[in-house]
Image 1 (spheres, rainbow, N blue to C red):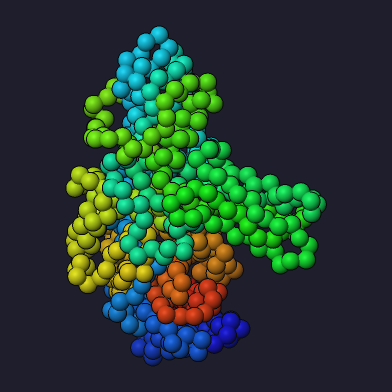
Image 2 (cartoon, rainbow, N blue to C red; image 1 turned 90 degrees about the vertical axis):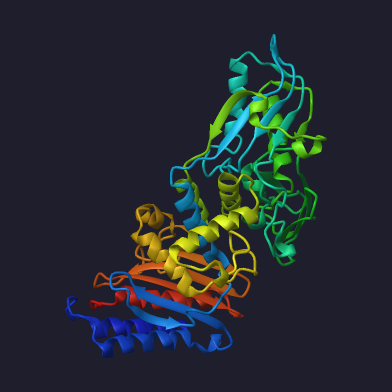
Amino acid sequence: MKLTQYFFLIIYISITLWGCSSSKEIPVARLTNLQKQIDSIFNDERFVNAHIGAIIKTMSSNKVLYERNAHKLFMPASNQKILTASAALIKLGADFRFRTILSKSGSIKDSIIDGDVIVFGDGDPTLYSRFYKTPEEAFRNWAKLLKQKGIKTISGNIIGDDNAFDDIAIGNGWSHDGLDVWYSAEVSALQFNENYVDLTIVPPSDNETKCAIIPNVQSSYFNLIDSINISDTKKPFINVTREYGTNDIVISGNVKKNSAKIYRSPSITNPTKFYVTVLKEVFEAEEIKVLGKALDCDEIKNWNHKPKDFTPIDTLYSPYLNDILKGMMKRSQNLYAETLVKTLGYNFLGKGTFENGRKIVNEVLTGIGINSDDYAYLDGSGLSRYNYVTPAQIVTILEWMNTSSLSKAWHDLLPVAGVDGTLSGRMKNSKAENNVHAKTGTISNVRGLSGYVTTSAGDDIVFSFLINSHLQSTKATEDITDSILQILAEYNFKIN
C-alpha cells in the first residue's frame, strides 16, 4: 500500500466517523473493522518478508484492540531504552544526581599545590552544551575556584579516576564499522563533551582554499586530518573516520565552493584521558600552570584510591536524572543509556559494570511482571543486535509506568509527535500531532515505535510496534506506523 492509499484510507475513516456521537460505545463489528484496517496497513506488500510485531491496548479497560506476534521476540533497537529508562527512574529516582569530586594530594605552599589534582567521577554525562553554556564551563569554574584560593601552579599531575566503572567502553555486539560515530561513543566514569567532537565543516569561497574545520572543543587530544577535495564537478560527499584505538580523525570527500556547512560528530577513544587533557588545557588557559601531565589513573602503577584518601576541593553535582533522561529519550542518546546501566551497578552493587547493571534492570522488570528468562538485555541503548524483547513486554512496562507515581515524569521523557525529539517531524497536521508520546528505534533493518496515543473519543491507548528483517527505507516504515497512529487518534467511538 502506498502513501497516497494511506491518505485516502484515513480520509475515508474520518468521513465515516464524522457526525457520530463520541459517547457511543464501540460495537464488536466496529472493532473488527478497525482491526481489518490496521491489518491492511501491516500487510503492505513492501513488508511481505518482514517480521512485524504489534499490540494495541486501552489503558482504562485493559482491552486488547489489536495484536500481531505480540508475544514473539524482536530486536527493539532504541525501544530498548524503555527498559533502561524505566529501571533507572524507578531505582535511582527523578532527583538522582551524579557527583564528581575534585581533590588534591599535596599541601598548598604559597600559591602552589605541591602535589596532584585528582578527579573522581561516577559517570556524569552532562558536561556538554546541552546542559552548560560550553562543554568546558565546569572546568573554567574549577579554575576560578583555584584562583580564588590563590593557586597559580600545580606541581604534579591532573589525574582522572574512572574506577567507579570498569574499562569495557563499548556495548555487547556493537557493530565495528560504527564505532567512530557519536552514537557509538565509548563509556567511562569520567565523560566530557559526550565523548565525541562536534565538527563544523565550512566549504571555501574558491577551489584553491581548504575547508575550515571547526571543532566545538579545542584540544590537543585529537588530530584533525583534512583530506577534502574542493570540486565543482565531482559528486559532493563527506566521510569522517577514526581508526579504532586512535584519535586521528580523517575528514575526506568532495565539496563544492560556497556550499552549505556540514556537521559531523566523530567519537574519541579513552574518554577519561580526553577529560583530564581538556581540564589541564583549561587550567593553563586560565593561567594556572600545570607542571605535570594529564593522566588516566590506569597509567599509574598500583593506583587504588578513594576520594577519602585526598583533600577535597569541590564537588560537582550533575543536573537531575529526570532532565538527563529527557536528553536520552528525546534525542535517543546511546551514551546516556549505557552510562545509566553502569550507574545502577555502581550505586546498588558497588561496581559500575554492565553485568551488575543488568542485574538491577532484571530485578526491576521482574517486579513489573516480566521474567528475565523471557527477554535478552545485552546493552542499555538498543545499539546491539543481541537484544530481544516482545511488544507485549514493552507494553507491560508502559502500562506500569503510566499507573505509577512516576507517571508524569515518565510521560515528559518521551518524544512528542510533531513537537520534539525524534518525532519532531512526524505526524504533523494530523490529530496525532502533539498527541502521540512514543519512543522511536532504528538500527539497520529494524524499526520500533512504542508509547501512548489518545483517541478523539478520549480513550488512552498504549501500543508497541516492532518491525524486524525489512529492507525498506526509514520513510516506508514510518508510513506504516504513523498511519495506524493517525487512525487511532481520529477514532471517535468510546471503547468499553
